[in-house]
Length: 80
Image (cartoon, rainbow, N blue to C red; front, top):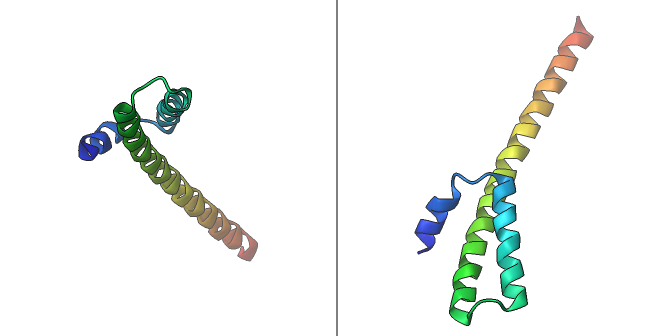
């Protein structure tokens, strides 16, 4: 089941992932679902959290790359 969850979330945007995760937390906290369903939703939530972390990691890498490129460009301008 976890493997299917991972495949399902791979195409979700960060915002959609957070929205689904928030809904899951709300259902669990309010006790609106059975224990078994709570465990399944918890598992799905953990998959969503993993996906969010991957998205954030990629965003951080992009920011670092942009910053490094900007520093390199500024260094070149100073030496000209």
